[in-house]
Image 1 (cartoon, rainbow, N blue to C red):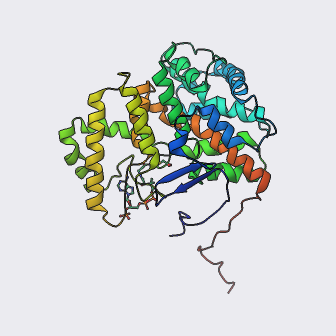
Image 2: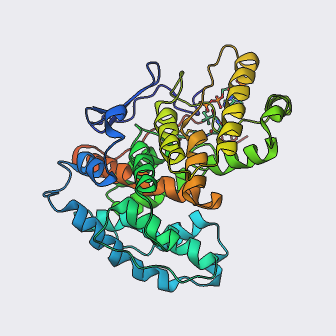
Length: 359
Ligand code: CMC
């Protein structure tokens, strides 16, 4: 089928390598397994290296960017709060100017990280909390949402999430960002394109529905019957299957590790974890029976759901948290496209009606 461009190579990149057969993700020469203990700032430096003149003050620059974009939360009104959180973040992000320099890039990376906690609080009738440029990006995101200093394990778990989702080959949102960047429209335009593509349930919109699924299943004993009924109705199981991976998504294990980090600090509900594990087992068994020729394994979104719920993010904001991490990857790809690529302009084959011949 032409529609999905499955095996088309549409870009060369030094940024990430997704090996769908081995189940391995490499970011600029470093395996995800080795990156998961890094701070998000360190992975940003790795991704952006060579795409901007000087990255030496990146952590401080990112802190200053959080402070600079905070003022846009003052413009949030009732109409904006009536939008879904990802639509509200997109609307606020659209206020940022285009440009191709590092300051523009850091403002765009800071935007979802500052706007999401602000919107969460405003939706609960609380005032947004101003960023603190003196702490790490992950720590500040949690502090702005929770209204208090987070525990070290919570910060480590969010860092692991942001690092794990920072980049992932030519996924739909990264492709969208590269297409827009290739027209030289500027970084803000490219990031808005990426965010809009990320929002869909087939890409970054799945983890909220994963929690809906856990709620609907209710208890481990119900899992097998529930997934069978769902598949019999022709529904897709959220958090399973991937265009590239034919084995378990390596990001699923990285994030399960983050969930386990939280388990040691009792931030995770063991009953919820046991339910998720039962649903995962039942789903994998049912998918194997139903689709023996197409390997459908756990993807990144399954444990994302459990992790972000345990960190206190409302499920309606999970795609915004995905965007907090992925914006770094979009910026790197957009710069790579502008610096080394050409206008992306593929062809379509016309299959519509021919003009009528004059009699
Ligand atoms: N549950 C049930 N059946 C599925 C699923 C699923 N999760 N995923 C694929 N299938 C079936 C699908 O119905 C199709 O069957 P048939 O050939 O009989 O029509 C077959 O497997 C192939 O599906 P496809 O749609 O051609 O595969 P794709 O490569 O286009 O889809 C996907 C990839 C992620 C969109 C899909 O697996 C899916 O919808 N998963 C659920 C949503 C989800 O978890 N999304 C997050 C993706 S990971 C985040 C990211 O990296 O972007």
